[in-house]
Length: 471
Image (cartoon, rainbow, N blue to C red):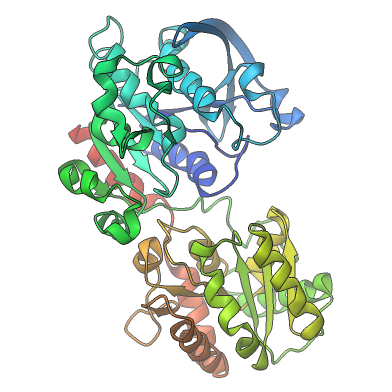
């Protein structure tokens, strides 16, 4: 079986979040299971020069973008035993940042159309094309409209994966023909609440729709989570499946990770985590206190990540005998408000703003607990990484957090959970974790169990392969 994985970002070339992480690891997991998986993504300006040096130019083609035809250079790279096709067009992709440009609709219409157009030129006809989120949501739409019965393209199945339904690719109706080049007959396919909605069109057009956790798949049938698409998803629930994401256990490995201060294993985690915690404190200029737990938070500073809950009770959290470290960036109101707590609690609180991958690894290795109080979390990778590094997650029971973290108050627990999106429920879970930390023997047993949890792609990749074979 052959799979083409179409994504707007993928490690190691370019990533802004969980999609890039998954796109860089899932095709590799499929390859290990003898599935011929290849990746297509844009050739962005920000891709490092050292990665560009190993790319091979294959050819260039002309891609239709409505009434225009645009140059597309096809570059090939190999990483982690997976072939990447990076599509070049300097007009669309020689810019700072992956997203947020005024013409994103046209940029990703070009990319989606090009991802199909390149197939005869790379001599790879997939059995299934998997596209991800709205940026490649036009792939199943274009395929059903223009390629399903075309010579050399027919017989391909399409899967659309929803990583985050908050971003749907909504635009005015006027771009249907002028930008997307779709016929008027496709209007009903893509129209939602009077606008063009790429995600809605992808859900309608794809042969199967997947989400990144079983709980999130169920949540998307609820208006509170679905951002207006619950009716569409309920009508198409027969082709919808929640398959839990995994993480790359070679990439996230405390035994070999070059970003941590000291490597450790399940046998040496006591001394290893202690050393990492002390060095993390030194890096962030926090006092050295062996008896005090460090709570970490690695997140985007936005409302749906639970920042409102944090702000409500942060004073109460910091009255406890703890140290609290936050790494992330996002809304200015949260960044500026959180920075005021550094002066008020200089021995207990630090916030570092920005996207700093090496520091995130040091926090995973050096913290005792990781707090994730999300309002919604389609899957979440941070809690899986935390478990891998023996850092106990404290999470709200939503999406993939519910599927991967079991409360330590019950059997086989590996973290602490709370149900309602409420600051005091979160505080209760945190206080239970602090109580657990005070019992060193039980806490070490919990840490060891956390490190032994399997959140690799082993199970999820097999489940996806079964779905693809059924298609």
